[in-house]
Image (tube, rainbow, N blue to C red; front, side):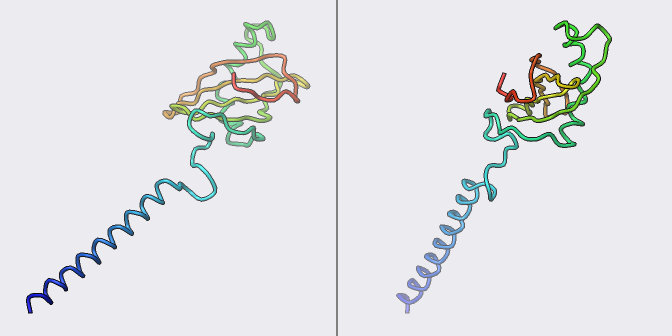
Length: 146
């Protein structure tokens, strides 16, 4: 009689152990696989610069938040007079880099056939900062990390 009880307890213990093992393996798979179709970081892997994308409304509206800084920076480069405004501020394309927030590298049309590349840091708190600007760019110039 006592041998059967022990055998029954062993069977229950093995069942619990195999259930826990399966659960563990599923959890490890979910954690390491990430979401379907790729990684979950919008700019690629953390620290890496993502592919160049055509501008969208969300990015246009976001980057318009630093238009004044771009104009002031263009004035220091001799491309605008102090207090002057660009005739256009259309984001053409952009790429992103995930850091402690997001860096945007964007090609912006500031006048017919006149382009600049801007680097804008968007902190997770929502603060925008123009961190760099390159002048005398063309529509064909690729956006590189700078």
